[in-house]
Amino acid sequence: MLFWLAAWQLGSMALGQRILLPSPAEALVRLGQLAVTGAFWGSVLRSSLRILGGFLLACCAAVPAAALAARFRPVRELLAPLVAAVKAVPVMSFIILALLWVAPEELALFISFLMVFPPIYLNLLEGISRTDPQLLEMARVFRVPLSRRIRSLYVPLTLPYFRSACSLALGLCWKSGVAAEVIGLPAGTMGERLYEAKIYLETPDLFAWTLTIVCLSVLFEKAFLALVDRAMRKVGG
Amino acid sequence: MEVRVDRLCKAYDGKPVLRNISLTLTPGVTCVMAPSGGGKTTLLRLLMGLERPDAGSVAAPAGARWAAVFQEDRLLPWLDAAGNLRFALSGWDPARAASLLSELNISLADPKPVGEYSGGMRRRLALARALLAPSDLLALDEPFTGLDAENRGLARECLLRETAGKPVVLATHDPGDAEALGARVISL
View 1 (cartoon, rainbow over the protein chains, first blue to last red):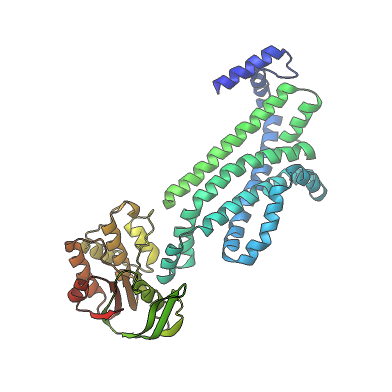
View 2 (spheres, helix red, strand yellow):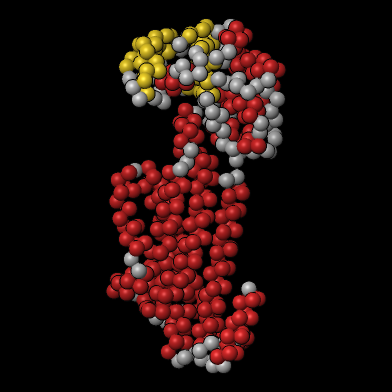
């Protein structure tokens, strides 16, 4: 980390033009200046709520979808091309298309949902499908109710799959969500600030906002995975 | 409670495993004896309805509940003994479970996940689970595998006491089991 900060500093000094590459200190100073304004926190809050809202909605949709797809083959076959298409189509195509369907304010939520759903759904489907058939048969013989089978068998065995999907999806939702805001330009969001930094060639602003987005992404990933880890310890998975 | 088996046949990949097996399970222990690969596990699985016979039939009273020790322990390795019993048994009695486990040299209060148990301990816990389960019939597939002489004796005592009045079918290749349990013997 220190090596790359030093490389950044040296690169900035070598170029000598803050418009091309501001130094880490300049970016941090600009971040400090932004962080004491209410507008900064307003933008952070608005963007975070939409992007994480999309993430949580995708989780809520992917869990029952994966459960139904694992149980009923037609559901799996129905969803397969849809999920494959969402995975393959460039996120920019979705953003431009979605601008026709939803208001710019909802764009980040929609795109974040779209990017998060496939990895969560596919990983959960894999986890459920790999549940030990011998344990399932044992549960059948002992007539274990479905609710208990879900709580004590499926949940512990699929949580590691859910965790790895979340780790991937949390990075994806920030990247795609902010990209959607840069295109859709909803008022008072981080995407709009990034766009303004580009228009006015305020490169330190661009770095300060990028740093903010990276920090938020890492912070939320660590917090969410800590919650999943806690759940895994609780169920013993 | 009786289970009638009539001319049961089962083959895997065209290779016959069971041919025209007919028997009646009545209360008490029935030992099914055969060498390894002789169809003991297949017979137990057919009895419990886990597989369909190629021919013949199994007639058990409607709604009859099976409890089983499978060829594998089939315990949830991340749960402790109490967790495993709580998972498999509806309306379990912790006091009765603690007493039975203690007879089998397992502590119900042990918080260790069963994945860390020895093979013998896991086998005894799997047996305890079957004995504690509310059931009308029991299918026990080599339930004493991996037990030393002392634990094998304790397990046999518990089995006889806890299954009194119920039909029990026990797959084994040890003639000592049938003798110690006073069981009827069916050789495949």
